[in-house]
Length: 311
Ligand code: FAQ
Image 1: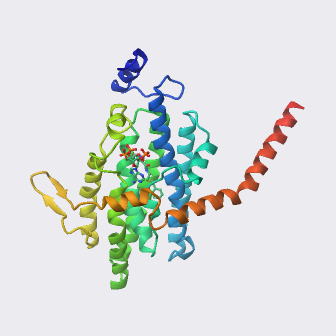
Image 2: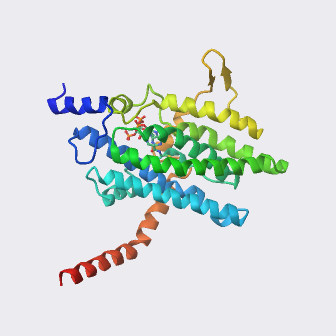
Image 3: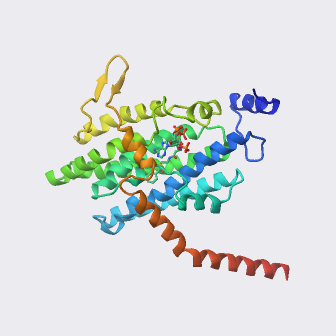
């Protein structure tokens, strides 16, 4: 049973009208957006850590400056997204508190370790590649501030994906040892990348309502399929093998069939028991604590300026 207000709201969504910060919205719509946008923001910030691990060991100056630029972009994405969440009436401090207390989710993918330089290639290619597939539809989602943030984010992500593929290409065309490094990175990042799209449609608790509200334009499984179909030819071009014996072209569907995802592993990572969950959280909490003096200085400076103006 929808109230008259809710019916009018749904009619605007159905007509493709963007919802803006000051518009009336159902509490549950606000809540689900805060949930998704803040998880997305946290993912960008925590997502800096796996790649941060290789900045000092990049093989060339050029690779190092590209990697640094990419990681800085992720910080920027986090800030746009926290900004978009703030338009819904939550404070950044509240959101960060939830992250630091281990209460807020962020993408499962960032709880895996980066063991070799090839992982920088695999992350750009597969992780940013998946992020783009998920985020392009979000540019058209019903909430204006989120949709607009996504437009800019997607432009930067496409550069990230290309730099990753370029690393993979270089390694795949290199010495047998380099090619083996690229294959090993693909072997480790393939399945976790497919998990980025979330649980199967049958298990996805938020999908039905989020689709109705046009926060989700495609289902988890639809986007996951798109990722597989797009990536298989790219792996073939690299001469690398996707670690899935069940992967094969399905002529009838015009799509690839692929093997079962290990959902137990996915659930374990979500519960905080992935290979790097504790380390990632500890690093973020330490960074927050180490930055306290700087935040205090900013506030002191702002207070002084304000006092000067009123004097
Ligand atoms: N990890 O009912 P659904 C990036 C949770 S890209 C952790 O299907 P929903 C760029 C889900 O939150 C990565 N948790 O949920 C980058 C829900 O829990 P809740 C970030 C997951 O929201 C690249 C529960 O499972 N991108 O950062 C995951 O309808 C390289 C049930 O799931 C985004 O966040 C997961 N993989 O659909 C940065 C995109 N999957 O909240 C650095 C925006 C699901 O009820 C380096 N988000 N869960 O407690 C979305 O599109 C959606 O939130 C989905 C999940 C599709 C992720």
